[in-house]
Image: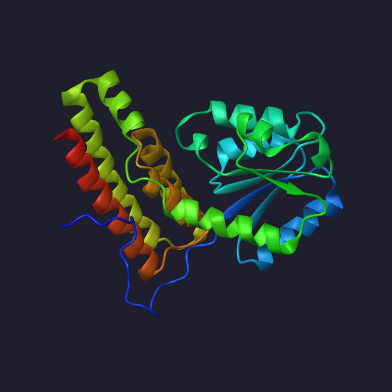
Length: 248
């Protein structure tokens, strides 16, 4: 197979499928604001997940497939900055997931300070629809352009387990991922399909296969159709090539 520059093969002009919707985690303690932002996210074609404080945001990020986080800075229990630090400390794919701060107190928070805390961008309350849509569009681009193989993660795993065991881990992962993708596409319910894809995502992230992990996350909650299965299998094939090149 000839590797491509993108994890998803290009289609002729006019035939490209829209990207799968993002799962957007919205952390906001005010119910009216929470529902308003969720409505805007849904109207942009994405799937919101709602939490009320930083602790719930951390739990949702740990347990669910999340592509982008909208994080209020001022919340009870745990504020947005503390929650973002904890999410970044998880390592792996959590180091690169987009986290967007939003607050009405923009005079006391500049973007450079927030970036040092782990945020990627800042939105002012009340949220402007155009700015939110631009953030979501960038989130789609970032999710689609996740690296096939994070060499730092992959090389660290190989060093930890050794070359021979590392090869067995890789072969087992590739075989298991192929079987689970097929099972997800043949699943009788979105819940069953999501369980299969969640397993692939977890193992892919542990191995450093970030493009595959990101795509599995975006497809969570659905039974992959023929096009989505083709995308999953293509990314898996490209990941196989990237791993082969890394092993040498």
